[in-house]
Image (cartoon, rainbow, N blue to C red; front, side, top):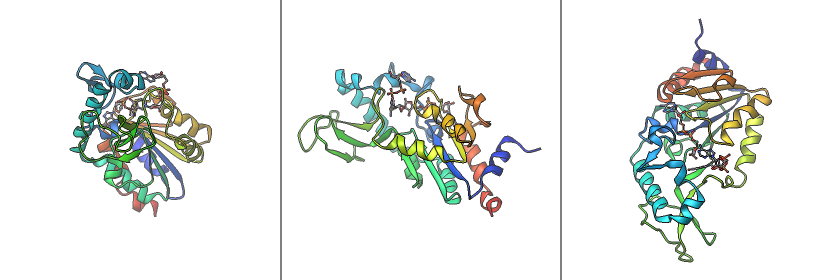
Length: 246
Ligand code: NAD
Ligand code: APR
């Protein structure tokens, strides 16, 4: 009797177009806190209350303190077996795209190349006034200033109420609309537009798969759902894939 995971493995074929969507759960085993549930609290604040333009406008020092804390925490984290398995999947499937909601940079650190960071990156900053934007890996001061105009810099991430980075949604919609297999991993599916990507895939006839620690609002709508740790399930999915593809 084939388990769900074996059925998903059997679906993967090098001629297929595969799109993977990841969320905070994929980095949980690296020690990066997720956003919702107990982990989603920083001091007495809900993380989603700090990831907002109005919070930055009224208390920029608090929001920067939060982001500098996250930058420091993530700088010490390493990719886990889930990130590595996705690099392997990219190697095996020529037509592959990884879309992540994560801003931690761990997919890139693991070696993923066909990667779209749809919510930006903790390792980017940009000016709140002029067009200056740059990569910033080094520790930042409490209220970092723009080297060009002297105004306050902000984290290069997408906050609630802000549009996604230009062009990102178009590429995502285009690629998902042409996918044969869509796999959602480690996301609570509570934040749009990512939470609706599976529907787009389904509408275009793709097979949809969820891999998550626990059920989400989308679970019952997916063709396959595998529950457990991404760092254990994904290596199982990619082990021996090369042989089954050839
Ligand atoms: P949205 O559809 O995610 O949100 C619509 C409205 O619902 C907004 O007013 C938002 O504040 C609220 N909302 C949605 N999910 C919420 C939640 N879980 N908790 C509290 N409020 C919630 O659209 P948006 O707000 O315009 O977001 C645009 C994009 O920015 C989305 O893709 C989102 O995922 C992303 N985002 C990124 C970060 C980050 O830290 N990188 C933080 C927030 C949002
Ligand atoms: N393996 C698989 N899934 C896991 C693991 C794990 N080891 N650990 C946790 N999870 C699952 C949780 O069960 C949960 O469903 O990962 C999911 C994480 O959900 P959220 O914390 O809501 O993260 P995410 O879905 O990525 O949030 C989306 O919201 O705050 C914004 O912009 C932020 O990108 C973020 C977006």
